[in-house]
Length: 454
Image 1 (cartoon, rainbow, N blue to C red):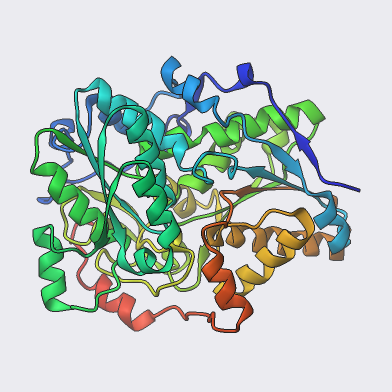
Image 2 (image 1 turned 90 degrees about the vertical axis):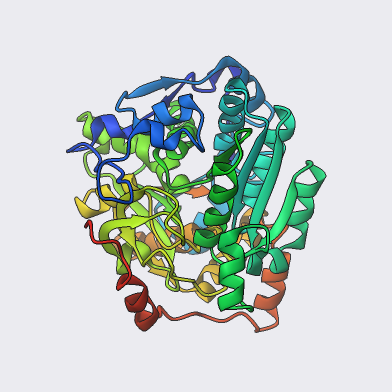
């Protein structure tokens, strides 16, 4: 039996984003300035447009999606919900496995869901240039595309290890008109300082963020754009879960568990938060819902990090957020799931995890590629390394159902395809890919440098 797709019509694209801040047990902890006082909206105005700042601070449950943004979404949305029947049969599980496939976007991932509105709001504010960071390149290519759509120049600081591992993602960004530089670079004071201290530095998302923020803060015509972590990014990504809810309604089902990879938190929050909103509203279907965030064992911010205030970047340019963190200057191993190599997790995801409302699990690199290859051979889609993390746990949960006989409904977020990650699969097939152990001693060194506002 072939896998089946549950589709929506274009007019069924959600008209509003869902903001989980309205339904948290307590308000989110405020971001702090460097002196430990609550950050004020005007302090963010040097790098963000007014609409983004408003969304970042908002506690409104529903925020309207601009018409022009929805029209661009029609290029690839609504994204399909797929019933993975072939995977179910191969596992011999009574569970029903579904995945929301975000690889249908022009860039092949979920990242344009936030890149398009961020570029729109910046254009509306009269901004001419954007700077940003990217790890694996999904975000960089997405903001490059969005910048082209709204007439914005884009400069991207790409984590050096990914810059070298993923040349075709870099070429995608250049095709859409963006400038791309390996980070750390010699273009910023932060980059030059790090290169002077560690010439062979492989880079990190925290360092790349520092470079992008430093440049944006120094130019009046330039703003900064972030691909994950912050509240407004996860707000934009809620379109994934909102669509999935409509699709499950069409077939009369509701998930028992929602699973997604988690680096900064955009893909996990994007698919899980609308379902958690049902749970907060007392929807009986969601009473026993499990939401599982999956991270790499080499960079386990939720499962091994500390819940405290920390900077979002390596140099302390950003406001401090209360989150699970491994320390802002922690440099993760060069795993191929570059999008998950971030030292912290979204403050919203972190607050839910600290309250025991979501689960988190860390999985090793080789096991994720095992799952990704198994999935590709059954369902036909080659997944991105980040997505392989969700597939691994979805398979594990389905096998548990095989042991217990439970007919659970499992939903996972297939955040993108792996067509530009084939060098990763080449290393996997040749036996060169390896697992990276959680570096407890390095994390302790980094945590020792945390700001003292936790």
